[in-house]
Length: 299
Image (cartoon, rainbow, N blue to C red):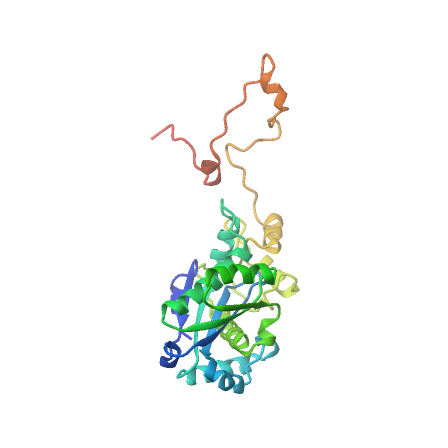
């Protein structure tokens, strides 16, 4: 799997896909959607689709695909290679979302939470398959959030397609299991071969599972937090675990227009209508505060 695009730019997202089997442009197809890496504080989240003609679903099931979480890494790799070898009837595509993209989306001025990001990414991959000419007839999705709400949203977006959204769909539907394998293989490879653009001293690649409650992951985060610049781009700095370590280990920042301890904040609203109302300094617009911008008095 070629993730060189992610190596060149680990701040955004990249899409990979197999060639579309000719039969998938002629016959009605079934398509599964799943993700890998939603919960970890380290590394990207990967969304994947896998599809095949309804007439060949038994052949996909014969590969004995299963929920990727129940398979070893070597088993997942073997099954992914097998799906590639069966490219005459099996197709796949995936989106790799970098930690930086996830965190900046969640912490931006206009909030874009992880559920919305997940829904939009899954929708985009289904649309990508349609744009590639795949005759999608049925879609099965492992849910994020409430299944009924998610299914209704997808059904409205794709009215001509039969959509099913279920919890644990990766264990119920082989086509979703196949998608979960694609996603997990891609994430494992991205994490294992992550290109650190930061020049880290004594880089330790043993960061455990990457999940926030893993002591080894927490130890890695504490070791590699830079007091001024924070974490490398491998870290989802919007996760509470990362934020807590920043608060304890990194330097605090005081902006020149920040209120100091002896300055008063806003008073009672009635004070603005009383005689002799206090003159308050006018703070810059939030746009300028968030970006640390200020008026230039000396050129």
